[in-house]
Length: 482
View 1: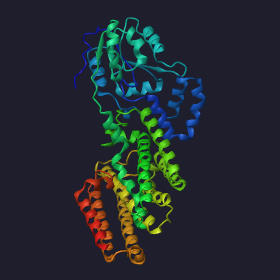
View 2 (view 1 turned 180 degrees about the vertical axis):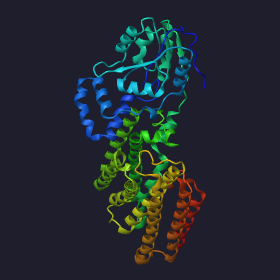
View 3 (view 1 turned 135 degrees about the horizontal axis):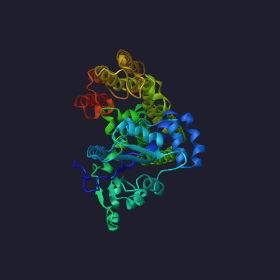
View 4 (view 1 turned 135 degrees about the vertical axis):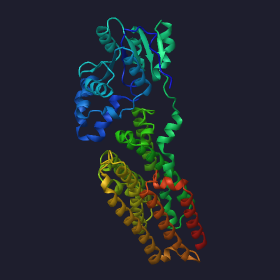
């Protein structure tokens, strides 16, 4: 990483750094609002009166409701190096931001390389020309200013030197034309398309294939209208599911940033802004809900229940041990319910009970890995979850028991509801299915207990050769039964 050299600027002039978009890749107000919304929703109404008093009052109220943890913010490493280098060379450094004063103080204390900090105080929103007036009063001999947005233009124009960060580089020519000495901070290059596709979790749409299961269960796979309607529902629900993944990432920002791999996700890392992701998720939900209502009212109702359950999970339920995986198992089962509701099919107790037990087991397998890793690294708990490192016997026991229960349910269905399945000449081949699923569950739990299961079990199965082989054998058995 090439470091910016400030030696060409006047030595005695202080370096003043902005916060949002400059020192951090994110927006502190959006971070603060999300934290209050997801962690203290009962107090969010308190911000409405302050909102009417102005932006500075809003920031102060939000900071009082829920303060941002400075340790988990997505800092720009380039700016941190610049500040450390300026400090080491004897130059004074200051954080001057439109964020609330308490946030500025906490960040200054955490980083430790600033000589002082100034933020909004509840009545004064320190942004644009108001920030410029404060800077001119505080540094009458001049200053070097590092910023990133159009709101910083009047400050750059009055500064003795301009450091352009992020989106601020597009103002370089404009500032040079009026004689401002400019330096650019070279930030990491992002691929927005790749980041958005990653956030949409298109690979997770494979889980939505469960919507088709009721059609095969009652032998309607040859009904063109039913299949076409289910395909549209599959795509529509994929859009809705992607929106919920984004919402879950927004709700889980701090935990993701503390996670070994999730901290590289686009929203957690600050490559996609909180505001953009929130607006995108709301738009996708609106479109998805409209299409769902058009397809079938009962399908729309099932989607509404799914949304209510997944939002409750994102906001609160994921913090409670075992409740979280129970909800995840229910969310998988809701996909089957959607397929039944969409085509006016009777709800199958066999199918729904198998799904609930099976996906509860898979959800626990993923959580078991996290608990085992926490135990191996000597951590007492998993951040953002309700599990401690000593819970691994519990997750192991419940997971294996529920997985075995799902196999028993499948065997009982084949045995006692054989007339439903005996549409071919060799129904005995159906017993290959529970055997194959049992072997696959054994593999999943073995890898989970050995901490080698790095992905969601369903996503893992899509790329695991052994899993694909088991699926192929089960498919062949079904073909032979017909």
